[in-house]
Image: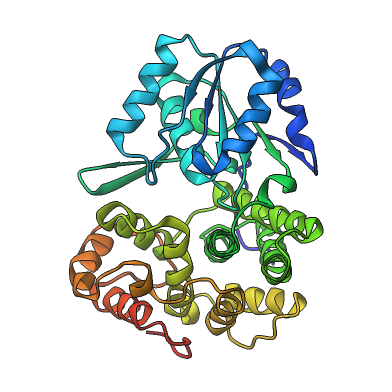
Length: 361
C-alpha cells in the first residue's frame, strides 16, 4: 500500500544544456521584462560580461556586493538599488549567495528572478529564502522568491575550482539525503532524490579527475537540478538546521560546512529512517561507489573527491558545540529522530573529529 503523501510542485521553467547562456535575452523577453538588475559576485565576472553584452541597455542596475548568508544590511542596499532604477526583473548569476541576494530583493518587491547557477547550490529551484542578522540566520518559504526561469549551462561550471566543485556537490547531496526522509515524501520525489544521489555520486569523481570534462559537468549539474527540486518540494531536517545555525552564528563557509556535517547527520538519522538509508546505499552502488552503509558511503564519496569531512577543518571551534547545540535544539527541526541536546552534541562532536562514521552518534 502506498503511504500517504503530499506532492506540491511550484512552477519553474528550466532551460538546460551547453551554451544556453546565449538564451538569456530570449528568456528575459519571454518574461515580458526590459529593465534588469544583474546580481553576481567576483567569481562570475567573466560570465556577467557575456550577459551584459547580450542585454545591453536592458541592464539598468548591477549589484556585485554578494555576501555569503545574505546579511540584512547588504540586502537592503540591493532592494534600494532595484527601487531606484525601476527594475522589473532580477538576474541572479552565480552560486547560492547570488541567488540568495536576488531572493532577498524579490521577497521585498515581488520582482521575478531569472537564475543562472554556476555552482551546484540548488537554491535556484526553491521558494526558500534566508537572511542573517545579529549572528542568526532566519529562513522561510515564499512563492515570490521562486525563480520564474532557471538556465542551467554546464559550460559555466567548468571554471569552478575542483575544491569548490566537490564541496558544492556535497551540498547538493545533502538536499537529496534529507529529502529522502522528509515526512509525507511522495513517490515521485523519492525517485528523483534517489536518481539525484546516483547522478552526483557518479559524476563528481569524474569532475574532480578532469574539471574540463563537459559530460561530467553536465551530469553533475543534472544531479544538482534534481537536488534543488528535492529541496524545493520536500522538507529538510536536522542537517539543514545545523548548517543554518552554524552559518549564521559562526559565519562558516556554506558548502564546505554542509559537506563536513552530512555524513554525521546521516548517521544520526540512520536507525529512524531505514528506507531512506537503503535508497542512498542503492544509489551509491548504482553510481559505482560501493557502500553497505549510507553514512560511511557518503563519507567515502566526500573523501574520494577531496571534500571536507571534518567540521573543525572548516573553521568551527569544538568549544562552541554546547552553545550551537542549544540553538539547534531550540529550533526543533522536523526530523525522523528526535532532536535532543545529547544527540546533537554527539553529532557535532563526531563531525569535529571527522572520522568515518560507523555507528549512530
